[in-house]
Image 1 (cartoon, rainbow, N blue to C red):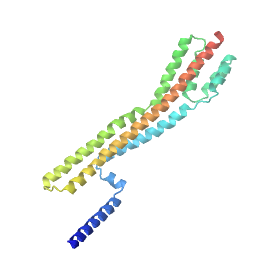
Image 2: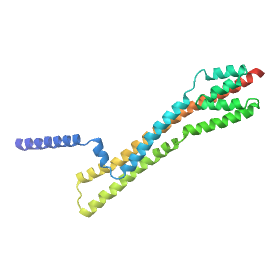
Image 3: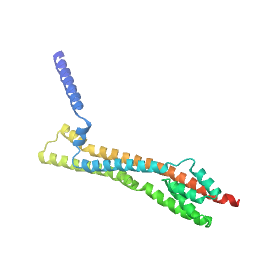
Image 4: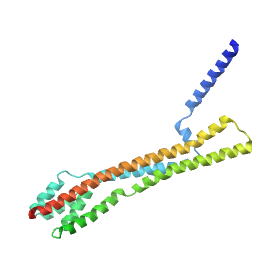
Length: 229
């Protein structure tokens, strides 16, 4: 009896060692390579999401840089009647706030409502420029998990078709096949989550820039109304 227990414990230890060795041999790239053909569109979606995120991040950060003294200088020039200097400053400043203020400066002398409307139109165009291609991130967040599930379903169909043809119904084979096919689902969910977080992060940056534009627009209108108070 003792010999049998010793033999069983030796087999269990050897099996555990083999399992640990197999786990060590499996790495991240090996797992991805087992995902099948569906991984290629997922790679493309991931690369597109990363490119759009960093491209938009750079563009939005550039657009959000506003000199704290910009509106003070504009105010001083308007109050002193030096509109040309104010326009020169706004033209030489490359951000949405400056372009919106420049449109307002061009409309000085017209009714306040007309000035506000023209500045609002410029603001809408600047918002469109900042949000350009961000809808692609939202699309990737939606379709990447679907691609992943499609890969899993296709893999499961293939797995059970092979079982049906060969008649081999071994638990380790089935379990191994299922976990490999689930790689596409996991990859799709991760890519979708990354795209979703990236889209919301960029949206928050755009909202902050929009608030700066609204504040500058309100301050500009106040400056125009100061002499008549």
